[in-house]
Image (cartoon, rainbow, N blue to C red):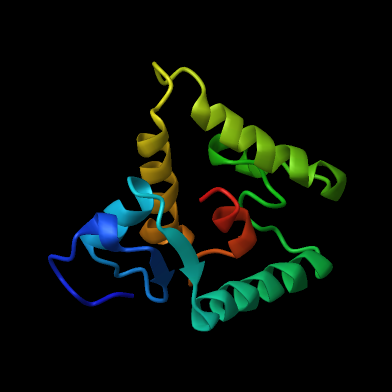
Length: 136
């Protein structure tokens, strides 16, 4: 994370996520000026550790909300392993429909970055960093 405040976002070329406590300038650099978003080794290791836990729970046939179960009221339904990818794709689609006019590129980038910064990143998640960095 760049700790300099009041830096011109247009001049920031790269933003590193470590603890998700980045500055507003860094946020705008990624969202508006397409600064490269990178993930620190610590950030990635937290994600890998969470992924290992998910994989262990899957191997133990444990219920994992939103992975092996449905969402919300559908939590009582078990999702077969062969339908897990479809479940993840469909949850994204369901959240993306009927929300009005399409977002601008800047708005979409802001939503995606906020998803990472606001709890979807370690320690709460096991998503893969390449899936986010490929979008930025």
